[in-house]
Length: 268
Image 1 (tube, one colour):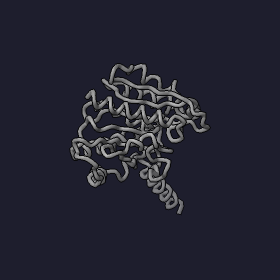
Image 2: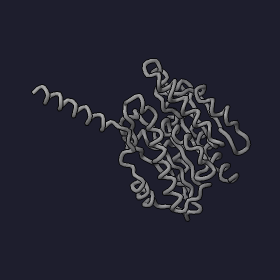
Image 3: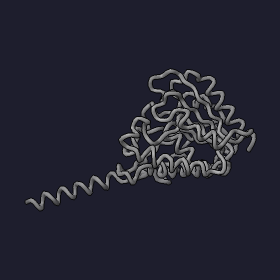
């Protein structure tokens, strides 16, 4: 009986372990491609502009409910929707194991999802110069991690409050996130030969304040149409990480995004 209980406990443990392994979830290449093939284009493909929006996540160990309203693209992006611009929300199903050794793997799995989406839009005839990535928090961070392909497969990134390694206040009891995994991914991010992005950072953000993201602008100073356009401000929100959604400078933010896209396309 005792051996039977032990065996059941071990089976339960291994079942839990397997269910918690890092996974791309339901987002296979075929499922993402099939979804994008059904998206109606508003103009001929060679003229169509597409912004792939990547939502944030609550915890990398669980599938994010991307259908929730707070995971929709912000108004500053949706205002771009017109006869020639499509804002497409890519729902991520990637998760990672809670094991310390798996910390940060969700970002790489999510990169695969974005790769699938880029391939699917290019296959439909969308021109790389008209294709942009955008995102909030984890979605913004992962989009920036795609920079090795900028000016080849897409034309730039619109990043709202990039983050992935938890809140700043969590560093004391989960130091491997902010003191090991985050620096490693920053090093990888900065290996990109070029970074064309507009990055919005917010004062008092619990995840990354402007000073925690300044490395982007320092490493890729803005020169003409290349580099990082770094925009930092404070809307006085208690939850500053959500400033992109309750933007006190909405009209200005939208105009800056619009100018960024126009400049990137004209300089391609």
